[in-house]
Amino acid sequence: MANILIAGCGDIGIRLAGLLHRKNHQVTGIRRHPPENLNETVNFYQADLTETSSFAALPLNFDEVVFMPTPGQRSLASYQAVYDTALENLLKHFEKAEHPPHWFFISSTSVYGQSNGEWIDEDSVTEANTPSGQIIRRAELRLLTVLPDTTIVRFSGIYGPGREYLLNSARTAPEIMRDPPYYTNRIHQDDCAGVLDFLIGLRLKGEKLATYYLASDDDPAPQWEVVSWMTEQMGCLPPAVKPPSTPPDLNKRCDNKRLKALGYQFIYPDYRNGYLPMIQKIVTDQISSAAAK
Image 1 (cartoon, rainbow, N blue to C red):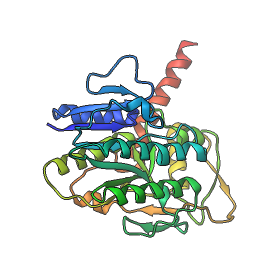
Image 2 (image 1 turned 90 degrees about the vertical axis):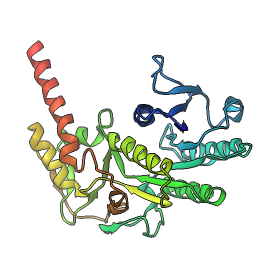
Image 3 (image 1 turned 45 degrees about the vertical axis):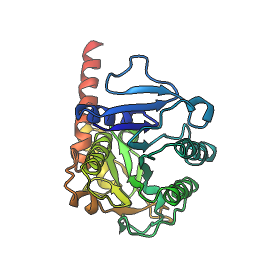
Image 4 (image 1 turned 30 degrees about the vertical axis):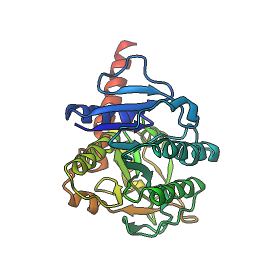
C-alpha cells in the first residue's frame, strides 16, 4: 500500500483516487474547497497551494505526489499562480522530508508549438508559442532540475461529461477550415485518470519510467471530420466551410506510442467511442424534455 498525495484534487483527481483506493492505496487530496459530501476514497486536506501557511501541517511521508492543480482562469496570472507559486511552495514543503516522494507532474501538449499538422512525440522540440504553454514548460524544467526522477505526463485536450465545449460548438453550425485540415487531439477524462493509475502502478511495481509521456487517444482527427460526425449524430446543421486563412498556431498530431508500448489500453481510443455516449445522453434528455411539455 502506498501513501499518495494528489495536489489539486478536482474531478480527474477524484476519479484517480477511486482507482487507487480500489488497490488499497491511501490517498490524500489537496483542494481549496473540498466537496461537502466527502468521498470515502480520498482524505481531503483543505489548503490553498499558493499560501504556504495553509498547508504547513501537511504530512511529509508520501510515496508519490501527483501535481495537477488547474488554473482558475485562462489569465497569465492564474497560470503563474499554479505553475510558479504553487509548485515552488510544494517543493519547499517537501524539502523537509527525510525520504522525498516521487512526483508525477501533469502537463499539457500546449508545450509543443508545431503548427503544420506534423506528428509529434515525447522527443519532439518543445517551443511553445503561447504564454500559457511557455509557463507550463518552464515548470516542467524547474521540477526536473530539482527532482530529475520526476515523471511528466502531457495531456492533450480533455473532454467528457461536464467538458462539452466541442459538442456545444457543433450545435451552432460553426465555420471550420476543411482544407488544409486542422487536427484535434483529445483524451477522455476517464482515460486521464486511467493513464495516471496505470503509470503509478508500474512505478510502484519497480518499473523504471521515462521522463515524459504524451497522453492522447489513438486518433488525432481533423476538426472538420469530428464536428461533421457530431452534427450527423445529433441531427444538427452541418458545419460551414471556412475559407483557408493563416495557419492556426497549434496544429499537430500527437503520437501515443510510448504510452501504448507499456501496455495501456484506452477506454475511449477515438472521438467516436468517447463522444457517442455523451451525444446519446443529450438526445435522450431532449426527447424527455419535449415529452414533458
